[in-house]
Length: 287
View (spheres, rainbow, N blue to C red):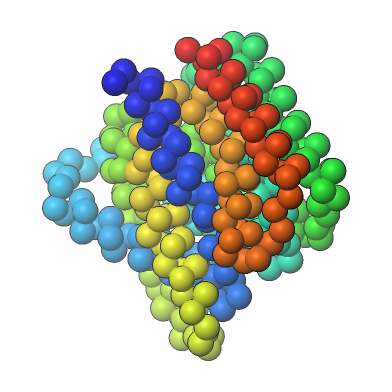
């Protein structure tokens, strides 16, 4: 299997894992405050990452790599989880997933600024068409959320796009799973005390759903998903493989319907097929 094809396969796996993040976060904030959820998920992921690094990795980041890891941690370990959890207190998972359609364009833009990638004009055209299809779907659905929730989700998407591009760029020299492992460890001195403080000051939920949501975002969203995603971006191209995120809202909506009882309409599936076509076309133009 060539490097590009392997990158797309790994990226698809990461995208599928991330598709469950917002439904799981929505379940989590039913029992945990956003700050508590963010701190605990980062701390659990860091402890697992420390074990993995101790068993399988002997290299350590050097010099400016530590600074880049701090920016990755600020984007995907702290920024996106906290801002999206705060947004999901006032909007549904489906509403938030519609806005996630802007993430591929955001990631591609940061790939140009930070990683030096230069996709063709046709690539940008298909990317914009795919984002426009999702936006049109949202308007057709009449998706409407509170201004505060929208603003928080948009801010989350911006910091996430930066974290994706910066982490993928760093993974070329440090390794995919090593980047997210060191990033969560960089954040641990802040996140662990905060997690203990937040858990002590709030009543723990009795329902199972918040605990399941917390477990998913801690192990899969915060750690395992990035192992596949960063490696896929590094092999297949940040801007190109990032277009797989156009499919994330629809996979996430199916999960939200199954887990949270939110409605899934035929128009959603039709739009998902059209967006899949845009992803395929963008992939061809990115070669």
